[in-house]
Image (cartoon, rainbow, N blue to C red; front, side, top):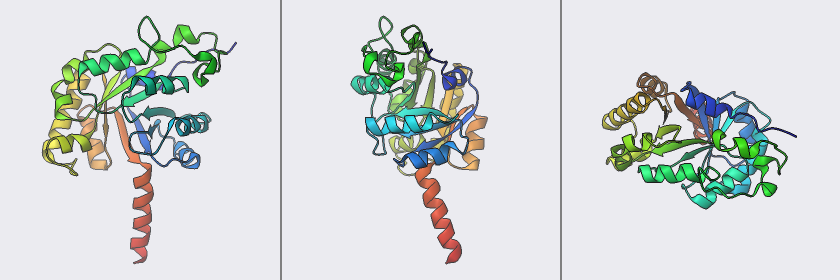
Length: 255
């Protein structure tokens, strides 16, 4: 029988290797393939702000499985039922938005694991994740292959960052500058000096706790700055912006 293989991204996250990824918000498999061919370390399927439902996420997973790039899925919310569905369609790496407390983080860890470590429901006969009961070692190995990235993006979340980092099963914390800026009164200005300072302090703290530190940095200046503060899980592009900016630049050259 087939065996469940090691989660490559989980290994990199645990070892705090530097990786670069891109947001996938255009709900189309051809777009997913175009991104995959660029050799990003990972692609994040954004179910929070893009119109991905569970079947569209599964279709993206099926498409991207032909490529070496790893996949992270961000659901709209850290909901127990939704996480169960994501696990069953084969998602191993999740980024959960708006994590603000250790209690939330502990619940997420449980939702991603089978008992006795967690509360994930058993439905492998219907699950793509287990190749429909064809992976001989699935139950023995599944829990250890799940990778949880908690997204901290509010002042409350930063106030509780130490406690979130202390939760066993949280593999990394990803800081969201845009929502943090809004939380700080700087809506629409994630590059505000006060926001950058808060993000930098958080990244340094995350690395001091020997966890992977992530952030979205959409310019060369921000990539260099946040990298110097310890960021190693770097989102460096968004497919919608790549298309919009390139299209605008092309038209501006003609005008």
